[in-house]
Length: 219
Ligand code: SF4
Ligand code: SF4
Image 1: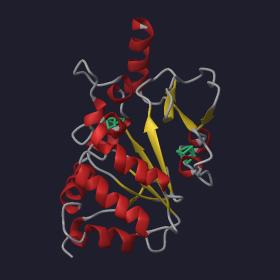
Image 2 (image 1 turned 180 degrees about the vertical axis):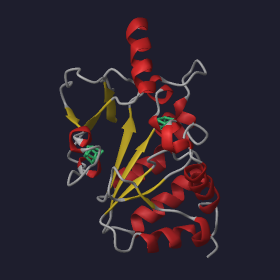
Image 3 (image 1 turned 120 degrees about the vertical axis):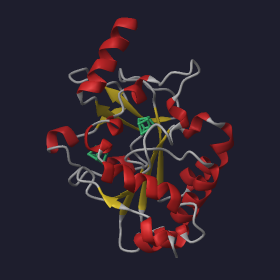
Image 4 (image 1 turned 30 degrees about the horizontal axis):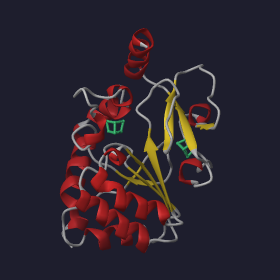
């Protein structure tokens, strides 16, 4: 099982649960709009700033990109999740490959005791629809289609959006409480919860603040 040597599930300080990630932007084909530019939400992506640029952090993501392509990756991941109750995919990065998506589906199906949360923009690509629908049909999986907006708006089918700091909460949105909890989820598991339709994440960081200012002027 060579995948076990460099496959890395990580405990993120925010989530308090295990997570598996890839490098932002390079594994995010859904980050680019029809005009060839990054969509607003991805222009301000937190996973391109700060500690995400540390060599060790990048290495974990680069190693994971190799690991999933190994023959035994599914078994390695299922074993890593044996004692978990919750698991989050993609603190950074996205499910850029259909082959990766099919392996993730197999892991989700083989770990019914684990609640999986998958944020993604791969819904923009028709060839991913079958596998995304199969994931969402599993009782232990919440796939959240990310809105590209940074003004709190979202469309039908979206499971998350970004709300500017201080802006009113749009109807139908459950606001993430992490900012009031020292940046941690603590006991909240709303993102994994199928009964919570849309999560609103408060914009944070200088990069996102600049994107919001530009979007407000343009809008
Ligand atoms: S898809 Fe997510 S991780 Fe990738 S660039 Fe956009 S916000 Fe960042
Ligand atoms: S909504 Fe809850 S589970 Fe989701 S990121 Fe925020 S605090 Fe964590």
